[in-house]
Length: 211
Length: 176
Image (tube, rainbow over all chains, first blue to last red; front, side, top):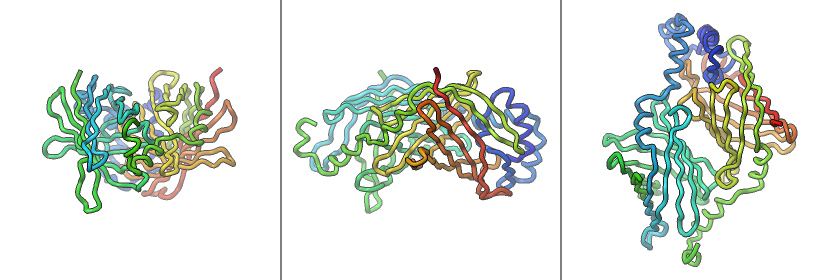
C-alpha cells in the first residue's frame, strides 16, 4: 500500500478500530512495485470509505467460505490406515466437530479418536485466502508437536486437493489430502504420501458421515 | 498399545516418541493467564495508533501448544493463535488468525535463554501492493507478570526494499 492511501485509509479506519491491515502494511512502506500507475492513481483517489471497503473485501469471507461452511456440524469418522503394508489396515471410529470462528473467516475442526488403543486428538483450522485465491489449513494433534500447514484448491472433479509436508523422524516428505464430497452428509479425506519414485501412496482414508 | 506393542515397527515407535512434550513446552506455561494488552501500531510516515485489549493464554492439546485468544476493548477485533515447540525440527512454531483477514500468519523461530527472548520469522504479502515481505517478531519475557511482543516488517521490493521497520508493539501485563 502506498503512503497516501494508507493515510487516507488510516483516517477512516482508525475510528472504526480496524487495524489489521495497517499492521499488515507496516510503517513507512511505500510500495510501488506490483501496482500499475493506473491502479496507484485509483488507490490514491479512493476516499477513506472506499479504501476501507477495498480492504474489507480481501479480509471478508466469500463464496469459498460459504462452501466450507456447509461442512460445519457433527460428524462420525471412520478411519482406515495402512500402518504395515503386510497387515490389514488399522480401522477406528471417532468424531469430528466443525464450527465457524472469527466471523466465518476460518473453520475449527476438533477431531477425536481412539487409534491403536491410544486416545488421539486433532485440531484443524481451515479457510480460504481471498488474496492468494487458495484454500489453507493447519493441523495439530496429540501424536506430534508440530503445526502442519496445507494449501491447495479444487481439481476438475471438484475435489479439494491440499498439499503440504509431513515431518517424520525419517525426514520431511511431501503429502497431500484429497477430500471428495459424496453428498451434503458425507465426505472422505484420502491421505497420500509421496514415494521415492514420485508416485503417491494412499496411506489411508477417513470417511465422515453427518450425525 | 495392546497387541501392537510387540510388532510395532521401529518407525512407528519413533513416531510415538515424537508426540511427547519437551522442556521447551514447560516455558510456554509462563504465558498462561489473562493479560492486559497495550498495542501500538506504526503506519504511514511515523504515525502511530494505540489500543487496548485482553489476551487469554491457555495450554491446549495436552500441553503441546499455548492457545491465544484476543479481543480488543471495543470488542471489534478478535484473534486467535497457537504457539508451540516442534521437537522434530527443533524450532518454535506459531500461527495467528483474526477477523480482519482471511490468511494465516505462520512463524518459525528460536528461543534465546540468555535474554529470555524468542525471535519468530515469517513471510507475508503486503495487502496493498501484493508483494512479499518478511516479518520478524521478538517476544521478551521480562518477569512473571510482564512480557512484550514487537513486530517488524521488511519489504522485499520497492523503495524500502531490505529496510526493516517496526510496525507493532504489544505490552502485556498480567491481569490482577
